[in-house]
Length: 229
View 1: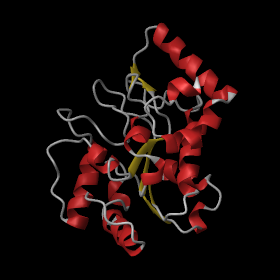
View 2 (view 1 turned 90 degrees about the vertical axis):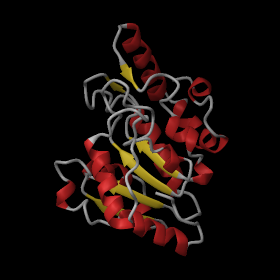
View 3 (view 1 turned 45 degrees about the vertical axis):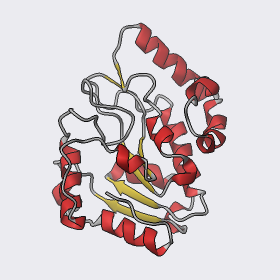
């Protein structure tokens, strides 16, 4: 993956943090592999131009909260570059339905009539997936292809910030990814963990975790304001 091409439109704060990893042989192989897959006629989500949307909407120097997903939605019209989010007009996925339920219980927030979370991203909520692409109808198909080095570097860059941030880790996959960052759990940041909001696990502890109110309480105490969830 050519660093200059990949980082077009990405804020300078992310470019400084991620350009070194984008220039590695691993990232170049990822870029070549993606082009070959598309040339072979495979449908890849999200489309070109939106794969780094999470970084574009949430500059590193503005990050206040990190929410980690696994990989993009693999259905038509769903993925648009933000973890757990779908464009307006697309049916709200089950995991996001459960996120909205917890928000209503925790903060009294009424669920909107859509699943677009860009208003979170623009407030400093980094909605980052582990892999930033997926083949249509093939969940997890682009795991272990090279995205992890890039998204690990993004998480590490947030962890290195002097300003306190909140990491919301839902499910074992997110916990494992974040815990690869040295010293994160013992730093000045707040790290909250819970089961994944998927219907398969939400009742095992995601419901009632109160992560949204706890994140705002921490941010306010640190002088970093509140997220308008």
